[in-house]
Image (cartoon, rainbow, N blue to C red; front, side, top):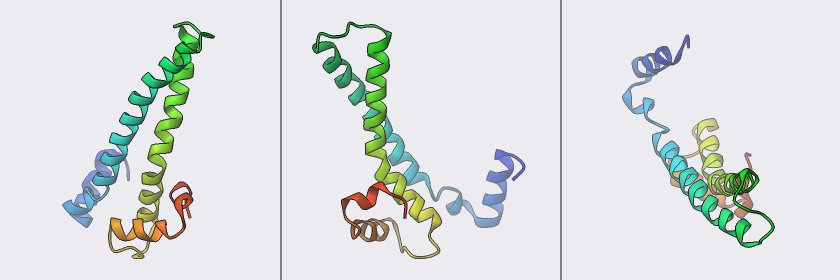
Length: 116
């Protein structure tokens, strides 16, 4: 693709409107989990850090809280990222999202935290 608009146009023209939005469900689900993970974990982490008494409300506290929140968001989003990657790389192995979830779950709980 020459640029983003060219990519959108070509996918629409060559593969249709449905294919253009094929990843929208996974992307919006991931976005929701990232937001929940970052916002909720940031507030909780900041409260925990401040309640230890070792740190005051300064830039280091905000950095540490953000670091913890990023870890929480990653932990929450990793299963969706694995599913998304499996679906994108599949060559017809999965009938739909739920089939991919079931097949991935057969690898055990850690199957959702690795890519193939």
